Image (cartoon, rainbow, N blue to C red; front, side):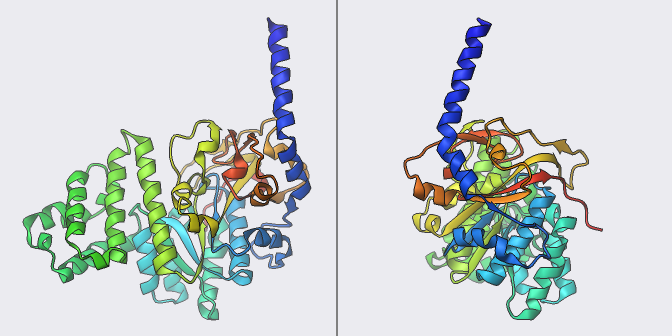
Amino acid sequence: MTKQFFLLTLVLFSLLSYGQQPTKKYVQNNMATIATIEPDSLNFKDLEAIGNAIGDSRIVMLGEQDHGDAPTFLAKTRLIKYLHEKKGFNVVAFESDFFALTEGWEKLNKEKSATNKFIRNNIFSLWSNSKECENLFYSYIPSTLQSGHLIIIAGFDSQVHANYSKENLKTFIDNYLKNKNIDFVKTPNYQSEFLSVMDGEPLISWAKPHASFVNAINTIISQLPKKDSTSFEMMVLKSMRENSRSTMQYRTNPKEYSDIRDQQMAENLKWLVQYKYPNEKIIVWAANAHILKNQIFIKVPKADRQPMGNFFTQDELLAKSTYILGFNARQGTAGRLTKESKYAIQAPKATGFETWIPDDTKFAFVDFKKFREKYPNQSTYFFMKGIGHSNAYALWTNIYDGVFYIRDMYPSEKME
């Protein structure tokens, strides 16, 4: 029995390896070596392979496997510099508070100390307190404000967490609704079921009366004029509503929580692309788990949630103008600033994507979009650490448009 099992395993392994040959060969023959991830390295010749792959795309999504991947933060910083200076990308949208970053940055006095304080208080501390993001946030972005070729910061996350929102969101919405003079504002429920719920930190606490808050927003939206349907205020209201809906599902139905949040993040990003910055090129900073598309092609572990990238690219025009770059690491440790414990990332599978890259290659880029164009009928599944730092079996060439490979992973350090 043991001998038969061994032979069967050998046959299956051989079939798997044979089926992967076209993809493996493509990766090995078309891999572009990246010279460095150091942010201060401004000779961008090695990044031209990524620039050529992006082509005329108007939206570029940059992922990360975990929210503490130090080399990824450095690589993304250098990529943002390249995309800004050589490819004309001027907006960077973060997986952070939609209202705070989008409205707050626009109203901000663009002076270095004010800019630094705003970034520190409004972008998630996973990044804003990271030593590896220091160059981007507190040196490069402020420098562009004085150059006349400035970078614009925006957010697209429905989660309300930032200081600017705590200080300004309630007044901003209250003034807008009173100016519209809708009927609901004149009722006692406006204060008890809507404004009072916005005090303190209610929109990130599942103990608050979210159901009545959601109903109140639905009433408000129904009474607003149709011409406001694409306004920023309307998007803020919808984002708050979906944040409350997802919060209600947080403990009891994690899948529903994630789907609601990711769908609203996609809607907020669409609004930035189509209405706020229709003539700008936009960089998106978020997790791999949020930016990936076609999650139905993930077989093991089975994907039971829909990511933002999938919702976003359901619009055919947006899909054609978007390049999604996932990040991948071979070995090392990972962890976040918000957690003391670190962990060893999984070793790659024997036939996995990471093993196709030469051992002495520290950084590389592979264009999966070009592979799809060259082999339109090829549907090869293979192992890759393409979401977090765990192996997953999927049709990765249809999930990302490209992959940025990092050999050695290590966790981010807190900025001094």
